[in-house]
Image (cartoon, rainbow, N blue to C red; front, side):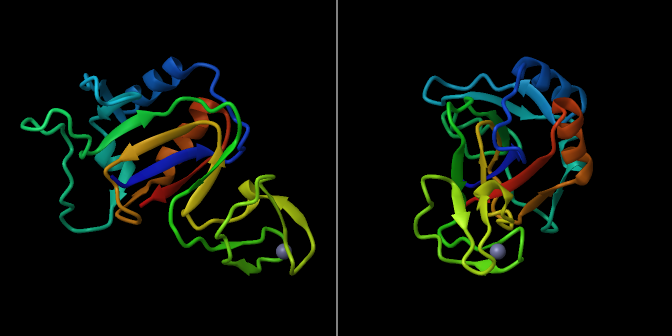
Length: 184
Ligand SMILES: [Zn+2]
């Protein structure tokens, strides 16, 4: 199932208090109630809130997206909902698409050869010679680095775009800047 993933721009960011983030996002109407998901579904998942459709802009005129759990398929995760993923021990690079393209933050040169991601998570740009952490490259919403991810399940790449107001809300709640990418 595709998803839209939110992450702090600072890859080392770790939330101090996830329940506080949850309740603040519920107050803004992005998150709704906790989903009483069946045992086969892992992670902490929430239904969308009352203001969801004003915080996320859908690009199609009539998106065929399920916004509620499927009554006839209780185990299905194929509807639009939000997951707080477990905080990772180390910074991870999440590849959202097979073919990645990004730009060097120093010389803006395009790099497209990402069959493998360097374990060091830094890259020595062969155009300008500057070595930079991968989190500083502009991945055009196809990948991201971090330890803490909030996933919006059921969204295909470019199908929906978070409003700047939603990203500012994330920033206000956590005290750090946020970005997003899509996983196909
Ligand atoms: Zn460069």
